[in-house]
Image (tube, rainbow, N blue to C red):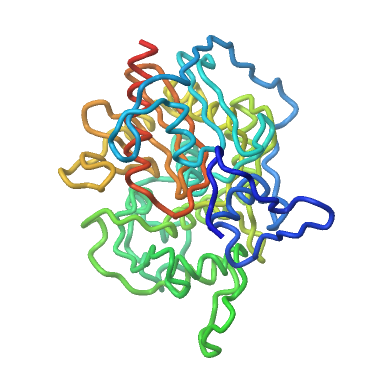
Length: 398
């Protein structure tokens, strides 16, 4: 069955009692099932709570502007409205904060202000930010070898890699991010993390990892010297998280709660998916509300807001750029688990597959959050159209 846009009839996925359209465990993150599943992760996977605490819920001022009819480019390059682009790109929620106030907020596909939505790899930026806090406190040193925190990695490809190289994804560890290959390393993450069952018909001789730590310890090969080049590999984030857990003696969900979620005034508890060993999936398993993602972005925009060292924010915005970095970010870079849009604006971005974005525009004092459920893992045309739409919004609100 093909996926559906918000303007299309909505199939009865997981509706009724009992449901006649049950999400398949092997493909819950693929279209059309992800249109339901990304908002209901706690109903299909084991999760752990990220507590918002007992503190005051931060309230946004509202200075709203109706941007529905704002002229933007579609993924095909022709002109449409912002409302049309949000429909075209399978949007579940879209938020714009201007100078800390809500300028534009829209929900689709059954999502509400209280709905937790899967972040996918935006979780990496949450994890990286937590590392920045611990580094600022002197509990970790980015120049130290990652084996100083996880000595077991001396027997893996991470031997002699620095923590900074892990943060920047410039280690030489061999790891395939081929999402559609069930046997690739990222395909093995699906099983090790508890996201997916072992695929039916798998080679019985293949030993699937039982949990994430076991998968990390299996990665013994390198493809280049550490520090030689950037290569996007999700497992790097999990190594950072495991190191932080070892240093603090606390689980990732507890750390994110204490160091970030309680301090930003989150409205709702968040959650992480957990593997059979209780490890929270740092590279993709985080879920939160649209506004709370906005609060996280606003904290970064405010130079850490006293929660994260401003020096770490500035360092994160100082990546090494190239002329052909990525098809959707030709002048981009990557640092400390964040994407950098270009060397001029130094706009930061949290980005996840299937269309998850937090765009932090320092020049225009603006944060834009887009939560989506694309039919495919990636779509560069959708991404480029989203970036251009955010730029159009920034100019409109100036």
